[in-house]
Image 1 (cartoon, rainbow, N blue to C red):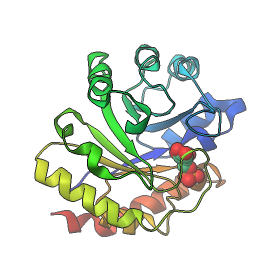
Image 2: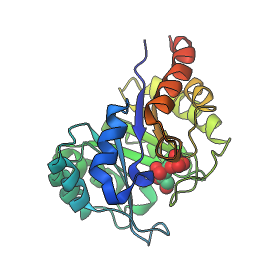
Image 3: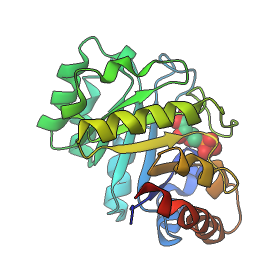
Image 4: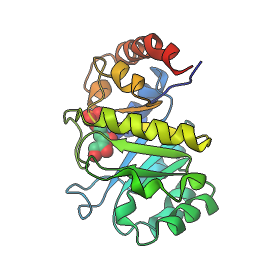
Length: 227
Ligand SMILES: O=C(CO)[C@@H](O)[C@H](O)COP(=O)(O)O
């Protein structure tokens, strides 16, 4: 059976009670904390840095933390996030001068590494780095804000990425981010994703557990189609 991971995006959490709200999403069944870092330069929004991540660790969050860097340049922040307690660090290849070097830097700092693809970024960047990836993240909205609608063309791109991962023989997670809801998560999983970021769908609902349980229910329906 395929193991799916649900990653609540704390961009949509209550920032005034971030530790408590993050813990609540994990207690409701979230597997991984998705941590969006925006610099108001690579994307038009400004969010959280390594100090906030460390504060979550100090608060007692022990779940994996998936840091999505929407910043340019990338490299200087990697040691900082690793030291603060990141598990995964992903970045946009067009924001790094040397993609291979940035991937190596993440690994050298003991984190899992990944590339993120915007809706209009081709998957060509994968060509020579599959052996260095633990995760591929496909954006299903343009990065910068939560609460946008899923871009349907992402489904074909997911199928393409799934094919490349399977052909490579490497153990690489395929994550999707943006507009993931109860009513589309099954279709997204059937296209090949195995890790799902959801912000507004979870934090915008009064009952996080109900949303996560319903998402898992949808995932169980498609589980068989992978094997
Ligand atoms: O990185 C981003 C947006 O740039 C995402 O992680 C959003 O936080 C997803 O939010 P929803 O679309 O699920 O509300």
